[in-house]
Length: 210
Image (tube, rainbow, N blue to C red; front, side, top):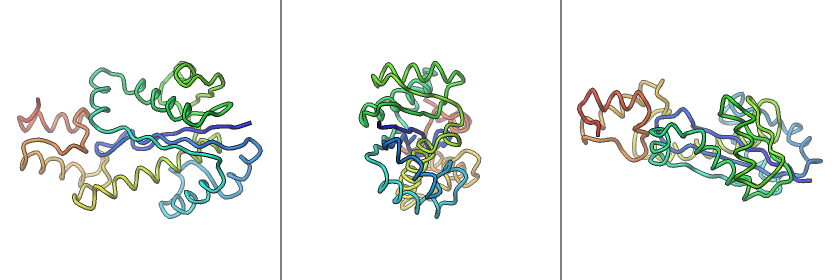
């Protein structure tokens, strides 16, 4: 009996991809995830996440990471379809891993509706969708760690060339970088999400909105 856990990382960021990660593991191995200290990635230090990343990959039977680029995120946000986009990518991950059942962290206010969407698209009947699944189910906690480490690595690549900070709108360094880039180049770099309200407002205030 194979169980899959799926979670995202970087949903609220103004920079970089939205990462969706999934792991597949035999049900009788799930307890080993708890033994090695797997928990919601937000409750772990970067060093702990990095250490667990390798241990998780040794324990699971398979895993898959999908990255949604900013341009695709922007298109979905403009249509108010971000949840549907994330649901499609979660279904893609689950279909790739082919488990008997799956647990996902719902980004929809209606977890049942979100689970039904993923079940239909992935063709996996048993999809358990709930809020805070990354804290409740070890398989989702493990997926959250894989997603977070993968996302951090993607941002690290951007940082090699640009001083973007954390990438989140709450980070003054991130917003300073975006503003200065717009003023200098007249547009945003391809790794910035222009549909995010703080970025959109900045473009409008500087007369650069399309």
